[in-house]
Each structure stands twice: as structure tokens, then as C-alpha cells.
Length: 118
Image (cartoon, rainbow, N blue to C red; front, top):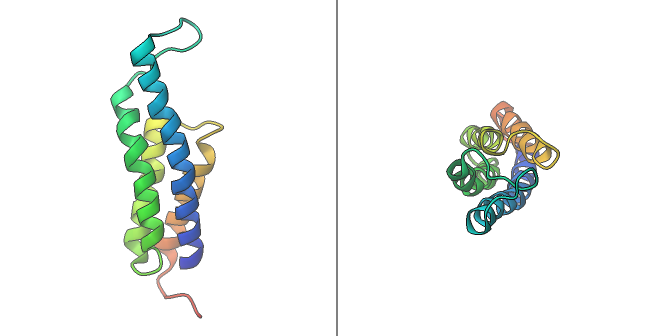
């Protein structure tokens, strides 16, 4: 289970980075060039999106990396990452996989009380 949590956390972190790049970039483009009514409007909290575009994927990557050695802390980091992605970006077609993978990896890491057999 620890190995599965590691893989899920790393994949969630990489997908979260892609979502974060686009989320951060979108808020910057709207700030620099202005809104286009009914087409491209600024999000309600651009600071939240920008902050969690960095923090949430890092938590997933760090949690995945820690899943083999300190599974409970790694699991908590992955669950925090899933919550952060949901808080900043919401649940949609591009965020459902990073959120689900980080959440599942976090649950698996928390459930792994014994080391995996070799």
C-alpha cells in the first residue's frame, strides 16, 4: 500500500502542477490584459489560486515521497493537497484526477500501518 500511495502522490503532484500552471497563468493574463465580459473573467480570489497553485502540488509530491518511510505524515500531506486543490480550483474536468489521486494516495498511506512485504 505504501508503494501505491507513493505512485499516486507523485502522479497527483505532477497533474496538480499542470493545473496550477494554468490556474496561475490565467489569473496573471487577466490581471495584465483585462477581462473579456462573458468570455474571460477574473476568478473570485486570485491570490488563493496563485498560492495553492504552488502549495497543493508540492504537498502531493512531498506526501508521495514520504509514503514509504513515514506513511502517516505522507498520507496527511496528500489529503491536505487534495483539500487544497479542491479549495483553490474546485472540482471539475481538469481537477478531478489530481484531487482523487491525492485523496486515494493519502487514504492508502494512512491505512498502511505495516511496511509492505518485499
